[in-house]
Length: 79
Image 1 (cartoon, rainbow, N blue to C red):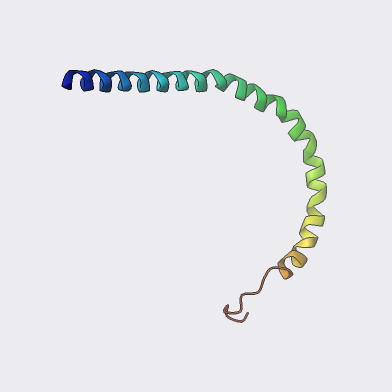
Image 2: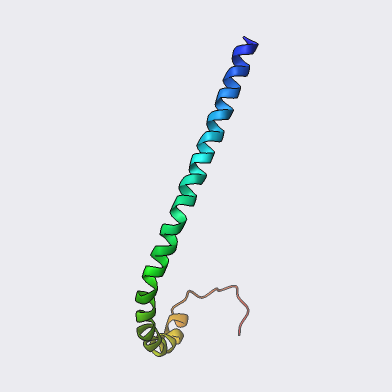
């Protein structure tokens, strides 16, 4: 029985090691694809920047209103 348990433990450990190695291989294989996707998205991100910058004054102007809508903490010290 001990030999069987030893063999079973060895088989499980080997399987876990092999599965880990396959997961690492898959992760490493995806790295170039991730880099290419990032590079492919860069022109779109750069194209959106002027619109984002143009919205900044409106966002800043809304800040006092959004701050006023935050719930009031009754236990907070007076300011």
